[in-house]
Image (cartoon, rainbow, N blue to C red; front, side, top):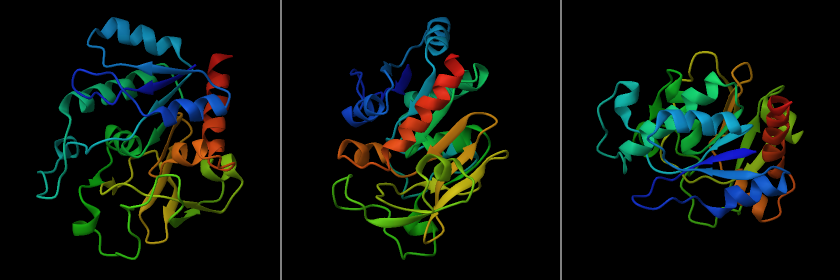
Length: 233
């Protein structure tokens, strides 16, 4: 049972279908986790799942990592920030493996004390890779270098990946206890991990590639399903 976090779009409960389809292709059962204000009920729901995906979305409020907002900061969703941090806290408490994707990796990093680039184009010197592509999400656009022994290497069996990018924020200082699992060729962090806590994250979107039939990117979800299976047992 793989929980998938809500986009928290006003009065609707919604998430991209690509996350659901990727989990199904990997052999898991996807479950949407809507914004729930009742702490006891949310805790009970988290205890009923075996794995969690933190989905992509808008910017993270820089107040959470001790910075004033940049002029280039995008839309911040305060209820979603609060909810996602609560999901991370409960997942850690109940030892639920977590895969954070795009915004999800950023939330994980900040939750454990790391920081973010609020806006790569204005804060990051190397502009050799465009991290906001104009092509569909399933089209590979740049290379990712995989760290040996990382969860990315274990999951995919690859030392490089071809993937996409749709973000202007990114991991800056990696949280204590985490390590970099992959980087873009410009050095931007593309994946982090803390296997002891059961937290893993990718800046790129493996779900987009998976639903398009990519046989490598589906392995990220197969990895999560395997980790969730250990928790279930």
